[in-house]
Image 1 (tube, helix red, strand yellow):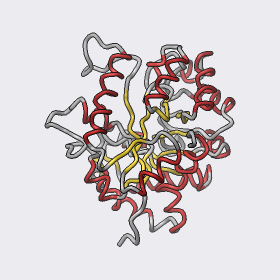
Image 2 (tube, helix red, strand yellow):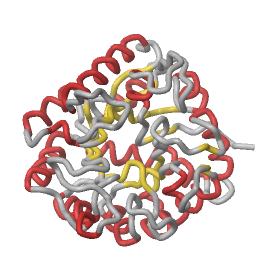
Image 3 (cartoon, helix red, strand yellow):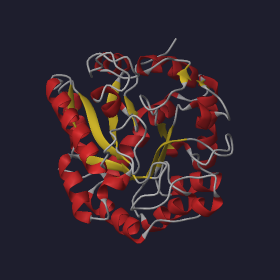
Image 4 (spheres, one colour):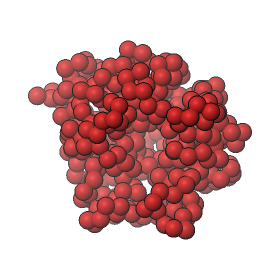
Amino acid sequence: MMTKKYSIIDLHADTPEFVLTDLKGGGNTLWKSRGHIDLPRLASAGALVQAMAIFAPANPLPYMPADYDVTVYFDRVYAAYQQALGACASAVAPVYTYEDIARNQSRGKISFMLTLEDGAVLESNLQTLDVLFEKGVRMITLTWNYENCLGYPNSRDSSVMEQGLKAFGKEAVRHMQDRGVIVDVSHLSDGGFWDVHGICDKPFVASHSGCRALCDHPRNLTDDMLRALGDRGGVVGVTFCAPFLRPNETVSRISDILEHMLHIKNVAGMEALALGSDFDGIDSQLEFLDYGGLPQLFRACEAVFTPREMDMITHENARRVFRDCLPHD
């Protein structure tokens, strides 16, 4: 039996697009969704901060509009997200500064931190980054699976994987640090990772990734990357996406997630370990079903991690990064 209810910080979920554009039908809302996340499940499991990613890729996916424009698409999802926040104001509140987390908690509200998955919407303009900051974006996953104005994605093609950040990408990373926007290297090429490491003097994160030593997928981090990220004070949000946990897998198993957690602890240090579910963005069948099933995962974690380490995994490590990177009042 689990000994306590943990405060949970999850560094990545695609809920804004999944719920607000109703990708799978059924009238999904933040109050009741057929996906992985809704407010009752967040509250029951112990959510402290949920990162909410707006996914606006450089190139459209098949379900996106035929006349896809990355800025128009971002604005559409953002407007719907803001409307939903207003409708749920009794239960959630946004994070603009680090102190908002404690303020929201004291008022009995879950914190939503707005993030961006794929920086294509920046379109090589730092002023757009400032606009996104004013809209509340506090973390940016620099690339998704396509090249964009910042750099190159993870790839099995070594000529792509070796490519680093573009000149604008390097400029944008510096500006993100100055403004208080967390730099996220999930989906980034290996060359891009090392450019970020060379530029950042604050912690950076891999919001939803795994370990390449355990699952040889280009989306995962090598041991050298894990150590470098940990040495910089960053965290890896362990993904729940099955094919990044075990090759050719379709079921996200607790045992595989634990294996990645333990590897990160052993290679990068306990301080580098966090949660990055990718809820509402993965098609894997989850052994623990959804956000409401996280206590099942934590019960298994308690068998191999100390009580202090459990607090670090579930919220303390990520909260430390927020303290070091986000704006303050």
